[in-house]
Structure formats: structure tokens, C-alpha cells
Length: 127
Image 1 (cartoon, rainbow, N blue to C red):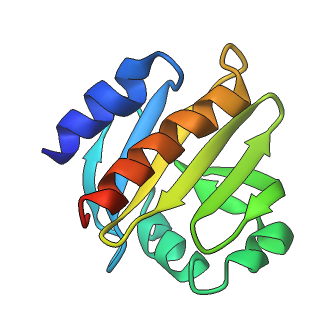
Image 2: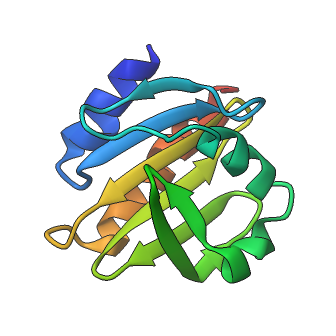
């Protein structure tokens, strides 16, 4: 089920080039797209980040060994971070943290909307 969300709703949208779904409880990876994965400890760090999302403005967010800078949004639901013209969008639901990665060929706002829309669906369905 989780892999289908990554393949069809995140990467399959054409608005992202990578997607990962991790457990909001322990940061374990539930699904990921080819060529995009979390390095050791990054899932747990994402879970910890949501305990104090404002710290992302100071510390940034590291996903897949790449450190991204947060300048726009970091709250209890969503964190948007960039590195150059690429970036990541994180959305927390009751069970998951969705991670969407976009490159310079994608529109950041459309990438964010794609991840947020899946987040809305999962929240509405108790996931």
C-alpha cells in the first residue's frame, strides 16, 4: 500500500523526482522511490524534528545525506526546505512523515501541493 502512494501519488505525479514514506513513530522507512533513501539515523531525526519543528530554521534538514535549508515553512504539519534550486517537502500525518524531493526542473509550489494533497488524503483516512 505505502509503496503505491510513493509510486503513483508522489513520483508518478511528475511533480517530484523522489519520495519516501517513513513511520511517524520511529522513522522507519515504509516505502521509497528508486535512488532516493534515508541515510542511517535520518528517519529518527525527522521524527525528532517534528517535536520542535521551528528548530529546522536553525539546523536545516538532512535527507539522503543532503542538508537542506529551511527558510519558508516549518510547523507541526509541514516543513519546506531547499538546497540551491532543488528541495524537499515534508508533511506529517498521524502515522507517517511524507518526504517529497524536487529538482530544478520542478516547480516548488506544485511539488509542495502534491505532497500536501497526499497528506490531506492520509489524514482524512486516519493514516
